[in-house]
Length: 532
Image (cartoon, rainbow, N blue to C red; front, top):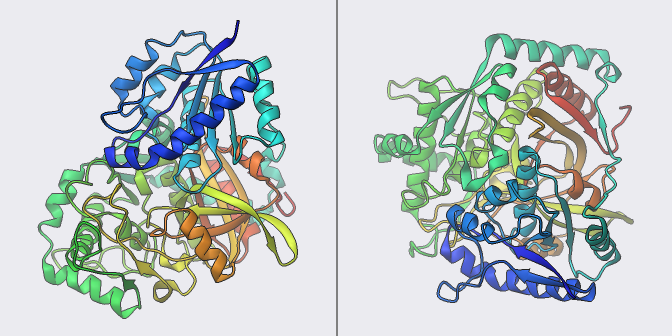
């Protein structure tokens, strides 16, 4: 008798996104069904395709609960994705599933399937759910087939994650260690406030840090409302917003504008974004916030244009000045770190980076990116895996080749952003970076940290990579030192990765690791690091 296993998948809340991404998901499922059949297993879809809506994704938390109610609790379960997905659609069911779980994604940059996979994986880790994970471009390669065979036979896949080791604080250079300890002790004593404009963006359970875990760091949340942000935008005058636009025009930022609101970036959309930039900064100042995060999806997408341009500006100390209603400049000469999609792991990271980099006299501009995709490339005669790191427009212009003058603002994709708004788009400048990720595991805060190099590729290759992913968004082409593609995917606990440039990355990494450890975060060094 043929063995049976169950397949589920999660999608977006936005119908247009589900419909557009469905062909890629259908192709993935067809391929997987054939591979499982080769092993004598019937991979059965746990719910039917919705022909009326034109897709086969679980599209709400309630729907996910109902689907899982009809899956035998001990049955082997396969979650497969070729698109961005909302983890909370399936987490209630997976949290209580007793059978072995396998998460799978196609290795493609077309839709953010790998991003969706990593978000689910990070959320399962936070929830304490055991699972295995694997990925493939063709589903015919030995890595995938051997891993799948192992999971079918023993219910788990054993990946090589030997690139990860726990931090030995005493091994850090003494000067860097002492500076990090001082910064950590100062934060714990004086404390800091994260302004959170509506928690829980797009079902990202892994991006929420409970107060009981966060507060011992000296970090507290000011829970703010996106409706208050819209209300405050209404108090910003057109003249104030036009000053922001003029500053950006004078710095050489090119806005790709048109007149069709549904398909093109328009001057009115940009004006609204400039008002949001002012309003967000004023609210942050009102509550003495040290960093802020705007959810945007889903709460604001039907109210105002995208927040991404705002976020990219805030993450850069070189930004248009913002004044209070009384004419006082707010956060003068400083970045106001913004954690995209209210990712609180990225918030802690940005707060620490800002303080460490400023203490070292470095540019504190930082951002998170999606771990979008990547390929092997020849770089100066050597073969390297070069990742595409990409976020929806919130990266600071100081990270881009040419700064503001080398950047553009383009209309956000309509399937995600019905009211448009511009991104802050550029290609990452060549240089050394420190990458990191703060995450929750076992009821405690952890951080993975390592080094990387951003490489500049030929224009034709850069263009090809943009066309393979999302053309309107910024892109960083990065090599992560001493970590293979599969080792990184097996270990990484989130869809996001935080980066910051550093002229002396070894010292910057050491100070940051020391500060995190002083705060009580369990720090893990990843990959090849000089002297550590």
